[in-house]
Structure formats: C-alpha cells, structure tokens
Length: 267
Length: 337
Image 1: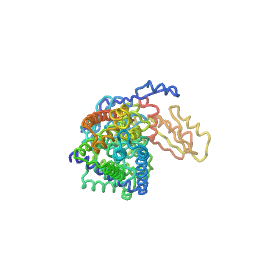
Image 2 (image 1 turned 120 degrees about the vertical axis):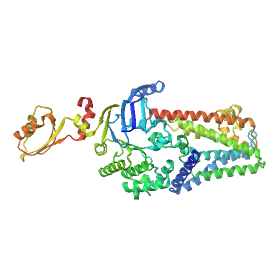
Image 3 (image 1 turned 90 degrees about the vertical axis):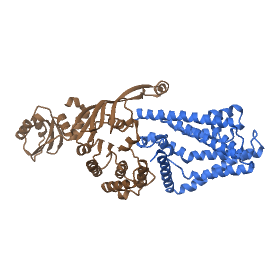
Image 4 (image 1 turned 30 degrees about the vertical axis):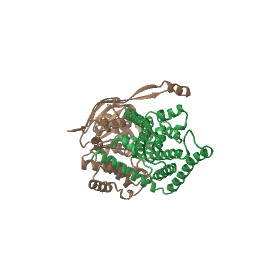
C-alpha cells in the first residue's frame, strides 16, 4: 500500500473514531447547535450595530464586511474540524507531552507530523461549516456582483494560502510545547485569529501592514473574502504564496528540531 | 546464537536544569539557567539473542527505562551503538516500528471514549494488518487473555487489570518480533500478575518473540527470565542467570526454627550466642525464629542451636530473592560479590 493510501485511510479511521465518540454523547449535539447559533448571532450582531450608524467603514459596506465575517467563521471552523483538536491533544495539561502518551505516538509506524495533525476530529463542526458558507453565500447574493471564474480561482488559491499559514502557525506553537510545558501556547492563536474578525483593510496603514505580513490574519481571512468579492490583486496573491511557503518551511524545521529535542531529553 | 539486540558502550546523559530553593533562585534561573549533567546510562554493553526473555532489574532511577527507550527508538543515545533487528532504533524507520512493541504499565495507548474493539481496529489500520490475520490473532489473544466480554466496553470503564489485558492485545495484534515490557504488572493483583506472566511465557514459546522486561516484582522476573541484566546507577553490574546472581551475591541462608513449647525469654540471646559470625534474627513470632546466617557457618550454627535450645522444627532455606535484591540495591553489588 502506498503512502498516500495509508494517509487517506488514517484520515478515514480517525474521522470515524471521532464520530463514534460524539455519538456516545448525544446531548453534545444540542449544546453544539446552541453554541453555533450564539456565536453567529454575536458575530453578525456586532457588525449590524456598527452599520446601523454608518454606511461604510473605509470603503467597506455592510455586506462586504459580512463576507469577511462569514470567512472568519469558515476559517475558524476549518481549524476546529481537525487541526485544532488534533494539535491541542499534544500540548496542554492533559496533552500527550504531559501525560507521556507521546511515546506511543512516536512508536507508531506512520509519519508523526501527519499523524498528530489528523488524529482528532470534531465532526459536529461540519454544521458550523455549512452555516458559515451560507452566511458567505447570502452576503455575496446581496452584493450582487457576479462571481467570475477568476474570482473562484483566486479564492481557491487564497484559501490554500490561508490554511497553510494557519497550520504553520499552529504547528510552530505546538512545537514550542516541546520546549516549554507551561500554558498551552495554542491559546495565543485563538486570540490572534480574533483580530481577523473585521476586514484588516479598515485599519490604519501600519496596522494593516502588520496584520497582513507579520501576524498574517489578513491573509487568513480578509484576502480570501476579497478574492470572492473581486477586490484582490495579483501582488497580494503571489506575496501570500511566498509567505505561506516560507512559514510552512520554518515551522516544519522547528517541528523536526522539537521532536529531536524530545527524544534527547524526555524521561 | 544470532544476536537480535546489540548494545555497545551505550551511554545517555541528560542535561537537567538545577537551581537552589526559593523564589530568588527561581528568578535567577529564569535568566541564567544552570544545568547539570546526569548520567542515566553509562557505557553499557550486552547482546540479546532471538527469542530470549531478559529481565532488566535495578532500583528506581537506575536507568532501566532509559535503556528500554533507547532500544525502542524513543531516545537518542548520547554515545555508543544500539542495533535492534538490524535497525538503528532512533531512526524510527517504519519497518522497524512494525517489528517492535512496547507496553508501559503506567501508560495506556487505548482510546478512552471508544470501545476496546474499535481501538483495536484503529491499530489494525495503522499497522496494516490484513483482515485475515487480524481475525485470527484477535481470536487467539482474546482466548488466551479471556477478554471476550471486554471488547464491547469503553476503555474508561475497565479495571486496571482488564485494561492491561486489552493493552497487551493491542500491543501484540501486529505480531511484533520484539516486545519491550516496562513494568507490565504494575499495580495488578496477584492473580492477574500470575495470568499475565503465564501468558507472556506461553507467547514467547509459541512465537519465539524476544522479550525484555523491567519489573519491580521479582516473581515476574523469576518466572519469566532465564537471564537478568542488573543495572545500578546507570552501570551494568550483572548479566547472567538469576539464581546465580542470588548465590553469588548472597552468601547467606535463612534458618527457620521453632523452639519447644515454653516460650523462653532467654531464647533470643541464646540463639545469638550460638555463633559469633555474621548473623541476625530477621523475624520472630512467638517461638518461631528466622535467622540469617552466613553459608559457611550453617553447619556449626545448627549444631550449636540444637545443643542449646530444645527445638521442634528446623529448616534451612535460601534467602528470598527479594531480600537478595534489596541487599544489592542498598549496599551496591560490588561490596556483595
């Protein structure tokens, strides 16, 4: 069996396993729906209040901003589907590093990085994914710009950039746990991504620059949204690709170094 | 003998941060951490053949687990050579990882929230065990370990002993060539311990699996291992048969006597007076005494005992292995041999 097939099967079995776990807690389902609705109300309500007073913010209309909100929810939920739960299982107080279960992870005859990235799923998040896509679709219809093929292509590329950046940052923060077993650093990520709730383009130039290139929440959320609306330019897309590749390579190196550190010092 | 495991001058040094007690010292170490080197394993060498069952023994912190982790590839050695089944463990090659299995008595690899059988299916997929093999091995292990009724339960609802059996099933599903057992019977009751011991014995005979076991229960080691490797403070101090270790190290035997009915308060002193060599009364209950005596003094001592105290019973036994090991741990093996 070749590598790709094995990886695919791993994804399938861990997704199934998660489904079995969730079925065991039926009540969770209702709590989850309630939580989703609350979060949606909070996000949309927030911008509704602002736009009840003003027509535009730095050139952004309500429905354009709503696309960004939908994108914020979409990216957040893509993270919550498996990357978040999986990597959270490594660091933190009952994480594998703390309990020593990481030993078993290292003993498994599968690529470690892949394994730790897909081992836990939250299948119920699929509901949130659908809702966030519905929000985006609704907003796009209201804007009534035609979504062209170019927009779609740009969107797919920018989602790719977004997820690569997201994964790289989370992998790097998880790797940091190998050096420091304190507060789970992944929490930092949750705060950082909150900054992408609104289009980064509404901020003053310096902030805009920082939020795009240094803490790349702009690339993670605003730019995929812009590419759907047709506001994106080639410079940003190609810059994003370079940034994503760069970040991924750095975090990959850091991760490998961290595994080495584990195997030279754990007890 | 074909060596499956080759260890040469294996060494592991940990760098651990140290600091004085107190808040100020803690703050200081924040900016300028001080490290000290701890030698966990110090240049040990040994070879283990295919199908051998070898016990690693030694006090807590002796370096047993560290050695085991270097053999399984979880730890990089600081220096020296390890070769297991033709592989260098820490490279963690897929083919190597499929050949080995590790059971750690204090850790679990089963998932808590799904049934045991589902956990086993996950392992089947990871190790790419064919459906046929899976069914056959599962049947066999389920039969040997008597866990049929545990399969549909969630791991979180199992008792320690039950979980251990399922853990073993998980570890053996892919039929590893080499099995590392790190205190597999930790905290189990006597009958579970006995069962596991018999299981491993049978399994080893059937599949010729090489087994390395660490345990603090000497009964585990006594019944399973034809050979023990004794590690103390990172050094290999003994490599050979367990009985030989006992006779080499413990020049003592235990004499058990029962004095005649009258409980005589003088007995105690009388017994001690029977000999001037090294001896001590290690246990007394009513008229029964256990006395530890040097082997060379046994004859003289029994003779004079019989003369001075009316006895109803007298037996001479080897020092229990626990006592021998305890002596080694406390006094170090060098002084003993």
